[in-house]
Each structure stands twice: as structure tokens, then as C-alpha cells.
Length: 393
Image (tube, rainbow, N blue to C red; front, side, top):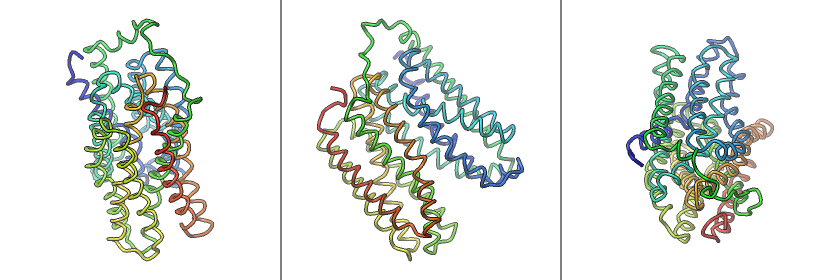
């Protein structure tokens, strides 16, 4: 690359918008509902819609990228996020439409960002994965923290417009990268002989393993975020304490996301097995601790610390593998597209199903048993999928 600074800036800004664009509004849902004269219950869909959109759009990303090139596809995807974020302030209908557009654009970012690292910085995939993952985790928490103060000082529309400006900066830096480093032209002029062979992940057993693992990881994470505050309050915590508990999860995950990706990208498969197994064991212990129906604040802080540590290791393993266990950006995109399609489809349904069972039985026992079994299954599948050096042999 002619200038790596603009590429680094674009990766940082992509990390900022990957989650904050759709996880921030739910924090001020009451204000949004009051503005449009709607019950808050009707706006609960704002959390589910992006996940469903990820599942629907992810299968399309690889084919579109092969046709138009990675850089141009990502550029248009960011434009979708920008437009979607901007129109959300106009009306309730535009809020839904905008959320769908944001979800569609972020789905492309989720899939193509690992592929972009393989293409532009193949020897530094782990370091860059750690960079954008750390920024993603930190800025998601940051925007959730400032959401209420900004809304109180101004209004929630100002908060959304602030996010929209950040999205524009992400688009602008990626646009400058394609021009300065000649990425867009390189994609457009690549000859057929130079194009990596097309792979079909749906016929690959290891790709299917990653789909199942992505589903378990996403379902476990989003279910934890959605239900741990409620469960914690049922055991005696106050609403404020429950907020501290779930915030602590993100804080613990930040140092893990800074260190682990670089180690995973350069490690042997034996090290990966040991590290990820350590993560799943920590996560499993946290799940087992949730069976205590009279837990206090310290108990729940230990639970979320273990989830933050173990769950972040598992997530870092997944996103790093999309790059480190493929041979080029086309394979990376194909694997990431397939895995995230199934992963987010499962993730969209898991928190809802957890809640349905809770409403029927007023207990989280059996759902938590299923979560524990799923984490064990992840560990077994991970060990089996590491038999080959790359997914597509």
C-alpha cells in the first residue's frame, strides 16, 4: 500500500460503527417511543431486526464481492449504513427502514472486513483483527454510556446524527483508501487467471463446523446480553447493579480483544486448542454459576467476568479464523459469509426462545442447561475442525 495510515484509520472507524450503529438506540428506547407515540414493546424489534438482516444478507455478500470487487462492495455497503442511519430520525416507518438498511450494510462489513485484512495486510491479520475488535468493543460501550446524557441534553435524534457523522467518516476514509492505494482499480482490472478459484463452502464439512460454532457463539453472547440483567435482578440485584454487571462484561473483554487475535493468528493449532478450550471452560463455569437463584452482586460480577474473558476468546477465535484458516480473501469472504449467515440466524432466535420459555415456566433452568450443552458442543466441534491447516484444501 502507498499509504497505510488511511487504511488504519478506515479499519478503526469500521470498528466503531460495526455494533454502535444498532446497539445504541435501544438504550434510549423510551425517548424514541415517546417521540413517535408508540409503546416501547413495539420497538423491541429494533434489536432483532439487524440480526435477522445479517442472516438474510450475509449469503449474498460473497457473490456480490466477486462481481464488483471487495473495495467497491464495501464502499456501497457503508453508503447503505450512512443513509439508513440518517433516515431513522424522520418517522417510525423510516426508523424501521433505516434499521434494515443499517443491518444490511453492516452485514457486508462483518463478512468483508476479515477478507480485506487478508488482502491488504496478510502478515498482520491478527494485529489488525485485535485493533478493530478492541475499538468495536470499547466504542459500543462508549456510545451506550453517552446515549442517555446526549439525549437528555438535546434529544435522541442528535445522538443518531452523531452516529451518522461517524459512519460518513468511515465511508470517507475507505473511499480515500481505494483511491490512494489503488484498491478499486486493482479489483476492476484483475484478470481471470489471477482471480483465486471459486470455492463452495456449503459443500465443505469444516465450513459447516464454523457455521455451527458461529451460531453457538452468537446465540450465547446475545442471549447473555439480553437476559443476564433480568435474571440478576430476579436473584436480588437492583436495576443499577444489573447495569454494572453487564457493563463489566464489556470491560473484561477489552484487554482480551487487544491481546488474543495476534497470538491466535501466529500460533500453532495446539496453542489454539488450548487457548480456546480455556475460554470455553471459563464460559461454561459462568453458565453453571447462573443456577444460583440467590446470587449477590459479587457473584454476578464473577459470572460476567468469566463470560467476558471466555466469550471474547471464543469470538476472537472465530473472526481470526475467517482470515488465518483461509488462503486468500475470496476464501475468507466465502467462509465468513456462510458462517455468519447461520450464526446470526440462530442468534436472532435464541434470546427470543429463551424469553418464551422463561415466560411459560418463570425459570431459567432448562434454557441455561441448553446453553451449557452448547458451549461443550462448541469445544468438541472446534477440536475436530482444527484437524486441517486450512478450511479449503
